[in-house]
Image 1 (cartoon, helix red, strand yellow):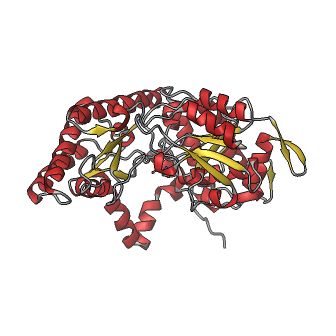
Image 2: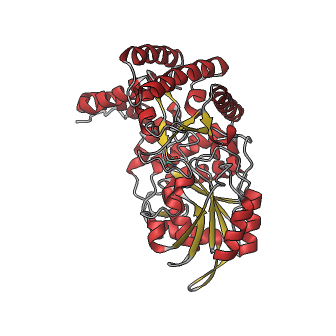
Image 3: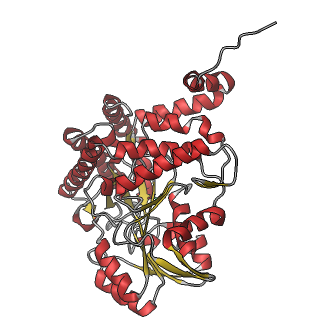
Amino acid sequence: MTMTLEKLTSEAYHDNLQAALIQFDPEVHKLIAKEYERLQDTIQLLAAENQCSRAALAALGSILQNKTCEGFPAARLHGGSSVMDEVEGLAIERAKRAFCAKYANVQPHSGTTANQIVITALLRPGDKILSMATSHGGHYSHGFIDSITARFFEIESYHVNRDTFLLDYDEIRKQARRFGPKLIICGASAYPRAIDFAKFRQIADEAGALLLADISHLSALVMGGVHASPIDYAHVTTTSTYKPGGPRGGLILSGKDYDRRIKTASGETQLWQLIEKTTFPGIQGTPYFSNIAAKAVFFKEALSEEYKARQVKVVENSKRLASILLRKGYNVLTGGTDNHLMLVNIADNSSHLTGLSAQQCLERCGIVVDKMLLPYDDNPNGPSGIRLGTPIITKNGMGTAEIDLIAELVDTVLSNLKSSGHAIDQSVADHVRGQAKDLANEFPLR
Ligand code: DSN
């Protein structure tokens, strides 16, 4: 007896993913739907988030996630890896083009892991790192006291100037000469002004140090041409891939120094080779191939004119929001912004107000921001600031008119917070929440 089996195509298999989830686990499906509604009904003023495209989400939810395959293209430990080699090769080639880099490693599971790989590759335990203080905007993985970086390396922090809240390159230069770091890390999670990567490279060269630029917060702007690129200044550049609008994950890049010879315990090797060896088998096992495929999709998006134009708009929106808040009398640190984010001192001279109370009240009113410790923040009640960012609202199509309304709504909440301390009147909350929802609903998630 012969039986004809209908072959399930990849398209049919992947098309039914949501249906499979609804059928098997409605509980999880409902939570995903709930999160979608939360996002769609509120204004996301987050600087450290973005929105991955539906095309990249489709790659994330694909069978590529099943493949166990350690190593790098054409040098794998496992059988059946040829398609993964093509996926990873495509992501690498597009990442190099998007950043004008000579080397790209798309395997890191996150921005933090990318930093850990680079730091472990370049340094021996006990070596010195000079990096930006976490409390002044640096990232935890750059050497925060509880991070693995601080456990194995000697960290000294540089700071922003107490009066201007700007990086003081002369001070950093002096500090580098005195401290003698083997690695300097630049790049920040909460710094609203442009970073001068060329100056950092001069400082590193004078101190005999290597330079790592972590541009997680700036990589979208770098790809969009609205912030200077560190690729040929830093010896190595890292970024997370979700902040510029791709899938969760990390990326390591290098420009003209990619094949520089680096001394190791057993001789000398090229920089990129050292990074690959430290990625696998050093720190990670199998790369997440569904994420790598989604990174490839995202880099294709980032190479488009639409993406580049959007980054110009992200900065325009950010500058406009900052300038309206300044005009309304808010203490926007450094007097504005050059990038996608701004820092606002909520407590200012009244320490009963905190960034946390502002974050919570804004969220009750449908506006989502991050509380933020500010440089030299000594508010006994908690962080004094909030960080606002424009990548998500810009991605969803908001522009000048919407920024003006958002500034009004933020001001309504914060000025009521000022007069009433930690709470906000229910009537104000209901009014602002309704307006925020109407505005957000006009701009469906993209
Ligand atoms: N970089 C952190 C932030 O900016 O919130 C997230 O890792």
